[in-house]
Length: 171
Image (cartoon, rainbow, N blue to C red):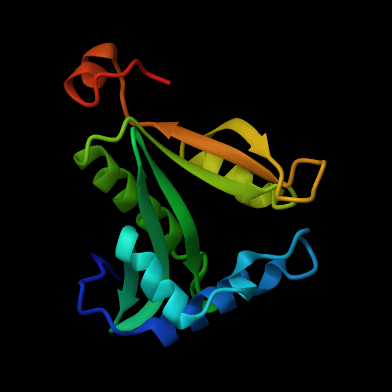
């Protein structure tokens, strides 16, 4: 398996869209409101990649997983992590997250944040196993109850790291 930053010439938007639809399909009927994946199109993914970094995992050229990383100074936001259902259990998701964490640290981010739907308890536990801690919750428009949990992983280990990076105190 190989993880790579999608080049500006990346042109597999339909295949990426199919991968995301496959990976997010098991959320249908489990989360409320429904996943934003239902509104995404291949063209929408291409537009998303203009302002974000796209990492893809491949095996023999076949797309197996992806994740988007968006600068949100002083943090980075990790979103749309997906692994094909028939490729799960091989460490692809964890490898994508590790690469995203390394990229964020290289770019001077002090932390990586993400959101997980409240109902997806197993996903929150998985991210906790990778060092992410619950840092808040939020509600989609029109909802009075929390619909998402924010999780954060610090990339600084000391105040000296923080000062050398962004100059802001650790979270």
